[in-house]
Length: 371
Image (cartoon, rainbow, N blue to C red; front, side):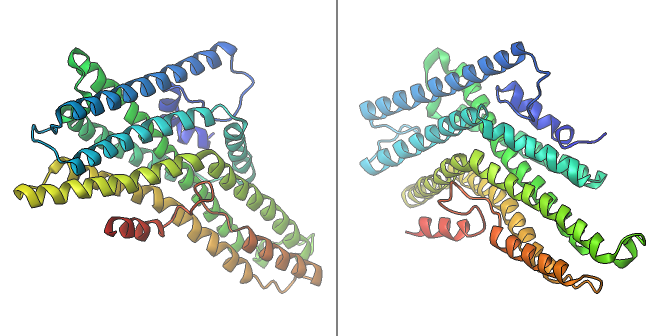
């Protein structure tokens, strides 16, 4: 029997190896398993914090003492400040996302998210196409993860962040493992957003067939059957909205940290690209690649919440198109009430309600870079 957990298995298994609790709560799990998962997660968090704090402090002291850049040239105060901000921004996002998500994975909200997902799955009885689309999103995400990991490995080899003497090889390996962990968290967010979008697509498809007279049983009146279907759909919609709220609670701070990191990274990399072109007419490929990768990350993070909002907007429109000839006055009143509730609910992905994660972030980023 297919299930969402099975469809997302490669991603959830990878996150469990990295020390995160992923999936619905099961009483059958032994205490030994929970303790091993917790110890692994703590070890990963400590290694991330220790490595990147050490790298940042060592990098700042090295630049302050020599005032020489990664390519051996003397640096102005502006460039020193820009390099320091860029290094702090890189350290901040890796430590912030890792620690935040690890703490979230231990909370009741995280378990409730997966339990709600299981309830929706049991209620909606998804077809095989739903699970195929879920698996495709995971496979596509893993392809991007692999490409990013390989490219980042070659970038880290040339980076001065990991100039730690004999510990440099170990630092490069641990830094790439830490970054892969963070990208896996982003991938999980995008996959969950995709799953929720597919859920709302299923709810909208139910609306399209809700008032078909040929599906009414001859033993019951059309109004009664429509009333039952409408009430069931209403419960499922409430669960779907609750699932969106759970995602916002679990990933809200992660999104804030990520978007701030992307904004700052766009500013620092743009400064380095423009400075290199003005000084020696060369294009720094490392900073260009970082800029492109950050742009792709922001686009992917924005795309699925945008698709979700589009499906949510279509829900209220589809409900207003229902004009059943067999419905009595009470059923029509109930239908109007559901339309009002759906319009008022309007679930969307937000970053701790500071801002909505949607296409409006793109002009905001453009405005930030320009000024």
